[in-house]
Image (cartoon, rainbow, N blue to C red):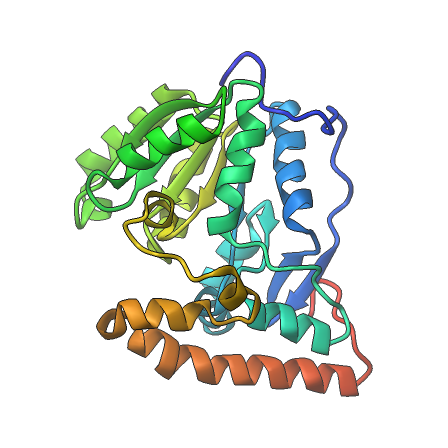
Amino acid sequence: MTATPATHESTSAEPPAERERVGIHGVGFDRVTMAQAVDRVLSAMALGEGGWVVTPNLEILRRASKDAAWRDKINAADLVVADGMPIIWASRLGGCALPERVAGSSMIEPLAKSAGEKGARVFLLGGNPGVAERAAGLLEQRCPGLVIAGTECPPMGFEADDRYMAGLEEKVVNANSDLVYVALGSPKQELLIHRLRHAAPKAWWLGIGISLSFLTGEVQRAPLWMQRLGLEWLHRLVQEPRRLAKRYLVNGLPFAVVLLLSGLLRRVRGGGSRWPDR
């Protein structure tokens, strides 16, 4: 790791406060704003402690509600934040509101900027060929002091290639990173982080899905008003209807209805759901 772990001015090397979590469909979400999430990561880095941020959206939460092993992996993360307005709305209906949506796509740049103030090192893993390299250049421009420790675009089926995985682990370890952004989509990125994070225990790992393509402009992100109205999925669907129709229309919308109704039912029964919620 770097000799001076990344901090920002408001961060002190004190143990973080006890986590306050909200249980939704078996997953415990940390009750934090974007700024608080960034500060929590930086505070841990100041103490030389690594961790894992997972940002469940509807699809990740839907899978967690059906798969106990997957749910356990998500709950094992050090910071779990809600990347989906339906999750926020369900928490409000249930009487134990999460303060705001904390999307991985929105978190990567402010986290990198604050970390860059102390010369932190970031490794970019994933994305389409060439995207990580272009994203690295943009982050260096926008985040003064940030050091790009390395980039890697794994080939298809890499996770089944033991030789490649051994080399990837060695590359990540030798990069001596403070932050590792993994842009492989879910569940591949979470499974990879769960597999590799213990090899670099002082790094903070963040699964960011398609975010490197957003950053470089390869894929256009929804405008802010659509994000606030919970319509970012519609913007993505229009861009990639064949790939995303089943995820959003067949799986996502029905689960969103169930999620909101369960929140309303919880309110009727008395409201609130501190973690754990089962």
